[in-house]
Amino acid sequence: MENTLSIAVVVPTLNAAADWPRFAPALLACIAPDQVLVIDSSSTDGTFELAQGAGFRVHTIARAEFNHGGTRQLAAELLPEAEVLVYLTQDAILATPDTIATLCKVFADPEIAAAYGRQLPRQGANPIESHARLFNYPPTSSIRTLEMREELGFKTIFISNSFAAYRRSALIQLGGFPSNTIFGEDTVIAAHFLRAGWKMAYVADAQVYHSHAYTWTQDFKRYFDIGVLHSHEAWLLKEFGNASGEGKRFVVSELKHLWSRHAWLIPSAVVRTGLKFVGYRLGRIEHALSLSWKRRLSMHHRFWK
Image (cartoon, rainbow, N blue to C red; front, side, top):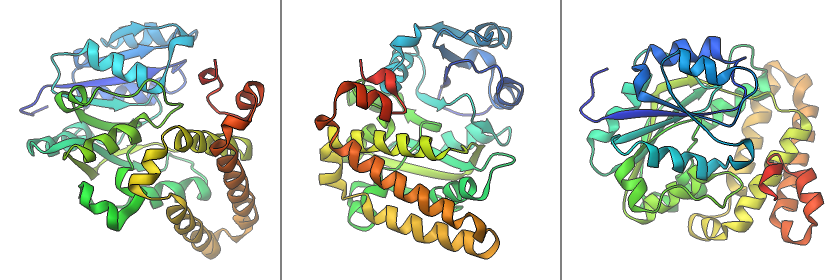
C-alpha cells in the first residue's frame, strides 16, 4: 500500500472468532500483517491463535483491564514508530482493498489530526439499523474545524473508533485518549483536537460494513451510557451545544425512512425513541443512582468498579 506516512492498524478484540472469516481477509487485503496490532482481552474462543496465525502482532490484557480509551492509548504507546494509527473494531469489515489507504490520504494535510470513514449497514441489516448508518454517515466527505460548531453543533465532534485514524503525534501531544470515560473516548479527543486548532476529516470514500441490530434493552443501555458520558464530560455540551437538536432530526428522518416501505416498524421505532430518551436522562443523573443500579442500567458494567 503506497503512502508516505507509516501506518499501523489497531484492533481491540474479545472473542472475535465468529467475525474472523470476514474480518481478517478484508484487513489483509488492505495492509501487511506486520502493521497490525491486536489488543486481545483474554479471549476464550481462539482469537489469540487466529490473530497470530494471520501474522498479526498480539498483545494480551486481562479482560477486567479493558477500557475503551485506556486500551486504545496503550496501543498508541506500543506503536511509537507509527505516524498514523488506524483503529478498527473486530466487526468492522473493510469494504475494498484500498479502504485504509483512502482514509489515510487526508493526512497529507498537516493540519488534519483525525479522520473517520463511512460505515455502511452490514449484510442483512434491518431497516431501523440501516437508517442509523445512512443518517450518521452521508455520502459526501467533509473537513471540520472549531469554527464549524456554530453551524453543526455537537455533530462537529462526531467520530467513531469503529473505523478512525489519528495522527499519532497530535494524539500524544494532547495527552492521548482519556482512560476515565465509560466510552466515547473518540468524541472527547476529537473535541480536544478542534479546541487546539487541529482539523478533522470525514472520508466518505473509505468504507466499512458495520452496524448493530440492538434490542430495546440494548438501546436503553447504550443511551444511558451516552448520558453518563455527557454528565462526566459536561464541557462537551457547553462548548459544542446540546445534542437534543441532532436527536430530534434523527427521529424525524427515521420516521420518514420507515413510512414509505416499512411503516409496520414505526411503533417499534417510537418505543425505541422513548427508551433512548429515558435511558439518556437517567445517565445524566447517574450520580443519584446506586452503584448496583448503574451496573444494571449500563451496557459497560465493568466500568462501574
